[in-house]
Image (cartoon, rainbow, N blue to C red; front, side):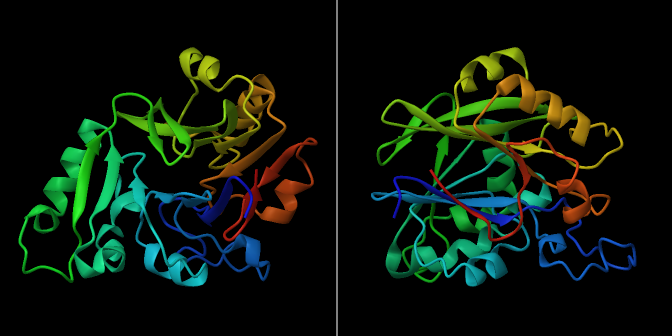
Length: 259
């Protein structure tokens, strides 16, 4: 295993691709890279593994990638496409194990309200989810990885991106749901090796970055490699890939980055 492996469990927007009832070119595509489940990642290090977001597709994603271990789960925000697979984390709590979860105070409050049953400390519930809430207010560590929250605007809510640093090296920044990257976050991720950016579609959107906006952010960050995620059915993988500059790629479900 490399020091840090990041797997894209899902790279799609809230409706997923193919979208129900849609016969567009991308939803009908035979290119497996155009089949996108809801956005999520899985991070592996020699001493610790964790996920970021558990949407409605989490069970299928975990089975596809043969995930057998989860030491913690991070959440970017509480929109349904990022939290509605929460109860599918149960197998990681079998035998009475507890699962640390990390989120902003606002996101945690919504998760605890939506899944109140999971936060009841009942010794009889050995087959159920046993989360341990951790409110993220600043950098924290998982194993030897320092994780820094990156607050970014996403419509009426603020979401958390996350910066992953090991041995003083900024390995990756994950910004899956955002309309912009504020100057303070730009300063925080300066010098990062890999940046992962929201790039919903070509046309501007009120809560997500367009391809043009994501490209502008990528150019400013200047990372060794940039990957686009949270993609809609307006973007066909092969078509978009041909237009991107060197160093910028389109993430797809199952893509692994070894950093």
